[in-house]
Image (tube, rainbow, N blue to C red; front, side, top):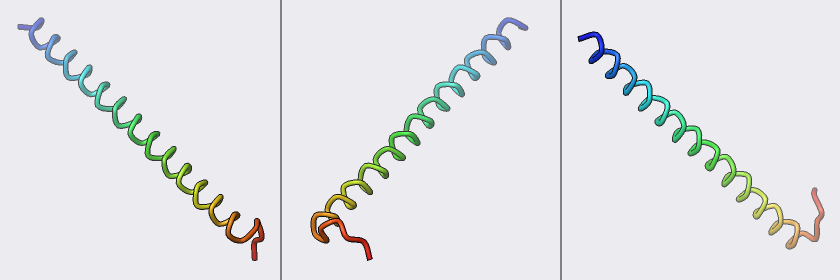
Length: 54
């Protein structure tokens, strides 16, 4: 009985770690994409405004 509980707890911890890793990866991807899109808009604004900032 103790072994069954130990295995269930271990599996729950493994799933929790997997979910945490996937969530961390998604947050990092979202952050990268946000910065990339901001850079694209910055380049477009610089091209239109010839690099001038008012």
